[in-house]
Length: 211
Ligand code: GAR
Image 1 (spheres, rainbow, N blue to C red):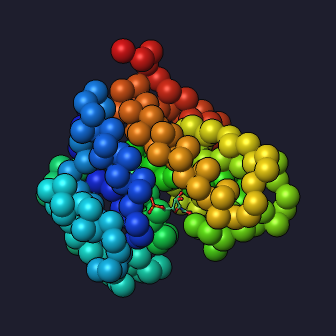
Image 2: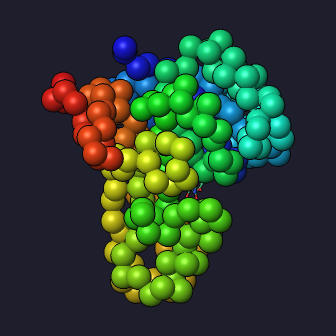
C-alpha cells in the first residue's frame, strides 16, 4: 500500500505541524499533509492549518475517553479524507485502542526526550524538560515512535540526542530539543512512507532500501 496522505493531530502551537508542512512544500517529501485534527477549538495550530488550506476539525470530549463514544466520528472523518498516515504532533490525548488498531504501523508520535526515559502519563511539554533539568542530564533529545496501546512505549523509529552543556534551565532545553524535533519528524515520516517498517521483537526495522 502506497502511503501518501497525512493527518496531523495536535493540541497546541503546532511548530511540529509547521515543520512537516514546510518539508512537504519544499518538495520531495512523500506524504502530503491533508488534514489537521485538534482536540480543542482554541488550539493555535488550527489557524495555521486553515491558512495552509488543510481540512481541519475539532474532536473534543467524548472522542478520547476510555469508552470513546464519538470515536466512530474520528474514524469516519479520517476515512473520508483517505488518510494513510497519522502523525501525533504535540497531541495531548491518549489515542483509544480502536483508533490505534485502525492505523497500526501507520501512526507516529513525537516525544521531546529520549524514550523510554522521561515518558509516560503526565510527561508532556514543559514537564518533560523540567524533569530532565532536575535529573541533571547531560543529554536529552527527541524520539519518534510508532503508536501502540502502551503510552509512549511503541517501537522507536528515530531518535536524536541533544547535548545539554551549559544550558541554563528547562526553557533552554525545550528550545534545543524542539529544533531537533523539527528535523526529525519529517525524516521519520519519510522513512515510514518510502521504506515501510516491520516490527521484530519490539524493534522497528525499515524494510526496503531507500530509493
Ligand atoms: C513538542 O515538543 C512535542 O514533542 C511535545 O509537545 C510539543 C508540541 O509543540 N509532545 C509531547 O510532549 C507529547 N508527549 P508544537 O505544538 O510546537 O509542535
